Length: 457
Image (cartoon, rainbow, N blue to C red; front, side, top):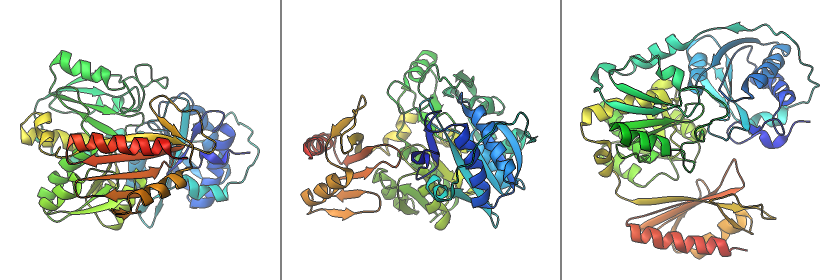
């Protein structure tokens, strides 16, 4: 039988092979065809060790259910989006677990409906999954195509690379799939590459740039090479992090502000999409610049939905996904890379100086393990005994004199500080975001909330 826990709110994801294996991939392939009605399907995969084995089982299921399959090979997730958006495919599946540890894998799924790309969430597919016995076949007929040149031409038409300054830039591909794409881009910059060779063991650091220690290598290299700044990509290259000249990761919601200002200069009063845990600096600056900020639930899928429904121009969130109207209303790390280079070129200041004027508040994100009964607490996380719902209800009561909203979890807002607490859609965690007008107030409220959460029963 298939492990139902792999069908997440956004996609399909689990540990290989205990939760997600070839048999599951085969059945997901068959179910995808039945659910989406797609008959001409494109498939790609990332650099994870299990990706090709899952690919072979997946395409067998797709084909046995009556679909024709085209393979674009090992590429970033956004190339799968491009293939469906640019060619005559009516569905697509990317085999990837994005930034998760190496033992994970998964599927991101889309279909085309009346010319518009629709994201298929894992939880939407689950009710239609039927388990059928999987018998591996030695050969399955698939067409292979090379889309990289077409994809890069499409991206290049969206921004004039001639305006980019000859910077010295460190780029860390995290041993994922960004490296081979970056190598084909012709830009007037000096690139010093880190971890460009795809390797599903991720030998140098985690595929998640936000994990502890993951950015140490690029930080040290920026200083050693006296580089102007740097970029980090995650495993499937759909998330991109800007790193300043001091080796510090720039908070992704502040990078969203850079992108927002860029687009608002071209399209005054455009709608900018941000999520519920972005800094309150985002809506404040967007309004100041004449734009219209639209707030959504957390998750790149939800930001994309907000972008599409509101006909926004750009959207982003603290995980460093950035979605663009010009890119099928989907996220693109490479397009964000191009635009950020142009923004920094036009500004002419150091990255830290550009970001400083946007850093008007102080914010902290924290995770708390919450299960009944409590699970073992991973390093760097705090644990408690109450359920997620019980904890949130107690917080509502404790801060009953505040402004409250429930767009995503619970947001408590006062004049000089706010916090959001929500249940993770992918892990047994409560995620806490706290922001304040001063660093002292942030530390005070962070301590206050931590003590409260740790005492919750």
